[in-house]
Image (cartoon, rainbow, N blue to C red):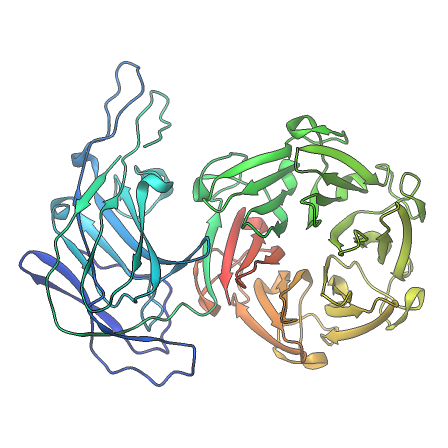
Length: 527
């Protein structure tokens, strides 16, 4: 039996031990004593909050076609069971003090062994997921169980003085002749072993990076990591946890539901065409913003236009006419030059990063386009309105007071624009490098995406440093995740790797979603 973990946090001294008790795998706390963490970093349970499950495999089915056989228990090479805590609709990995995701790996010969998870906490809801693989490792192509609700169980621990027992549902997929599949394992109740008080800790992996959706370049709607994107660029999230993605090279707007299901809302072919759903066409859409009524506003960069997508799937053009240029005025007559990102305020005013014009534009609710700040000459200077200068800015976000924050990409700085149009520099010294620090002492290398949380913390994708940075309200710049090396690694903090992270958004729980463009994935970061 293999105990496997992910997301190392070497500075935390704590580990899980496995032992066999009467044929039962027991995960419990042992080893070194707890380190002294600050308030809010750990919580300690003293009781018997445990969960018992016992896998019992039921063969999957198959579609009505000849010469195919359904998956059976014998087809499982190993079964991985992972523990998550539910925070609203968000799954947060439960890890030990070293940042290791709590999980159990059962070989085929061990599928009848009951499993006991300890160190669980009362008044907490957990999601227990199972993943059945037909070969060693965890390659998506070898997964033969579903990722939907038929393959996990949610359980709320209400008592830490007695064990909790619950069924664990897993289904093997159905086999179809062309190799696609849908559903199969069922896990029955396990018993429990009475024991003494349990002392444990629960620490979420600070700055843990996981893959939320996508796994390779392509265009495929599916669940989570089975879906495919091609150079995703912009992301936005609504209050229900639905994530919207500007899938740039696929010329499509995609949606990732809280369940992980990826669907295409509109587009899918290159062009400039209004219409409903897949009948519409985009040309390299990049930035997204959500209006209060659920309307999605889109920076359709290659079409030099601002588009909108209503909840009923209708795509229309708000401003711009596909010709690149620079012109203020009524929306239909206005011109843009590769707009990259977009923000919308509570009054339905829209703010556009007009990248190749080096300016920030405003579209009023009445449809009039004006230039808020910057000058087509480009450059760098603080000032008011057109006296300020930007250089190929690419990201924009808006705080609750109406201040705009801009990722001034080629100036390697983070800028601020007040509602009166006063532009100042918040962070970055203008040299392309990588250095944390306060305000103008920090360094970026082509900051691209930017988002803000309700506390005023800014989160920035530092594209050519392959990392995600944080700028506090006081101007302190720190690195949350990534280590300056392009690649693909899920992990914690600087153990993680990105390849050209661009769009970024933050949800109501403070979780970050990053469009990892060259990895063709959506990544999630827990600050």
